[in-house]
View 1 (spheres, rainbow, N blue to C red):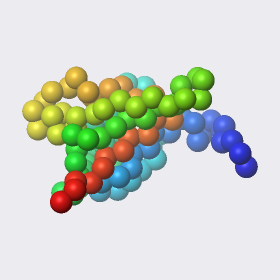
View 2: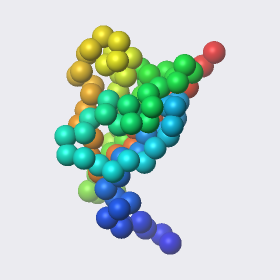
View 3: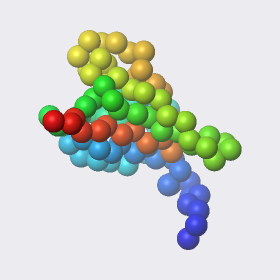
View 4: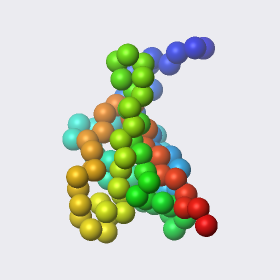
Length: 98
């Protein structure tokens, strides 16, 4: 198995890292980063929400990352990094360093 191309696999959005429940959820039109993170139960107390990233695979097989400022979205209502998600996107929320 070298390549996963099934419609079911490609049409999901994944949320990993310091979230309450890492998930792979079906993509819905109009879904945003915040929608996906809330579907994962939100961030944990160990999260570094302003260091989150959205990773998107491009047509040329490269990956582009977008910085997501979840703390600003959740606590200040600043929606400029609440990007629309696309099928196949991966959102990662790292843990804080102590």
